[in-house]
Image 1 (cartoon, rainbow, N blue to C red):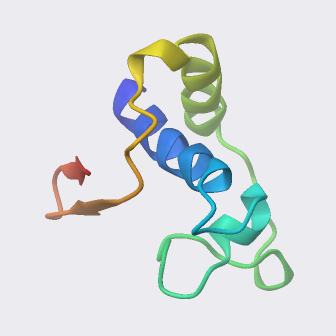
Image 2 (image 1 turned 90 degrees about the vertical axis):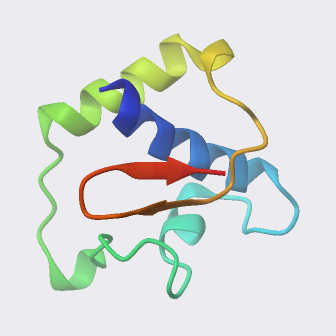
Length: 82
């Protein structure tokens, strides 16, 4: 859950950063940014308990997350944040 919460931190940091859109939807739907995102009009979303737990973890532990992390990439097993 804490690792997934880092993705939430990236999204929230981008919302606050002037180089990115200033709302969650616009950050998530920027071209080529979040490849796992599927537009609402093409997919009926189902928010999983894992996603809810990650968002809750982030908002209950914001001091654990750097406000400078704006990017992440993965190797198929782990995500790396910068």
